[in-house]
Image (cartoon, rainbow, N blue to C red; front, top):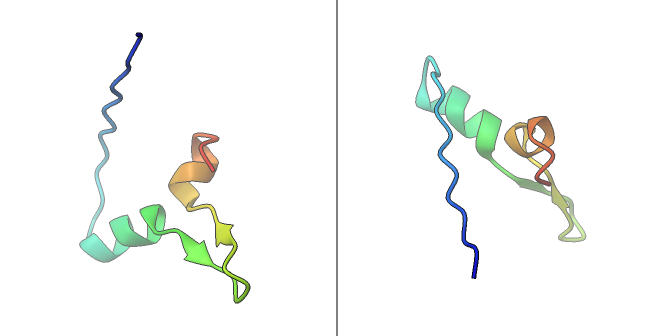
Length: 44
């Protein structure tokens, strides 16, 4: 089995800025909207 670990390093001015970058939002129907982080790295 081939397992991988990824480490992401970043610098944010505040916790609020970090949360804004990484938080996943949800539509009323429950569908998720990828975070900015997920969009930048094609993860969402």
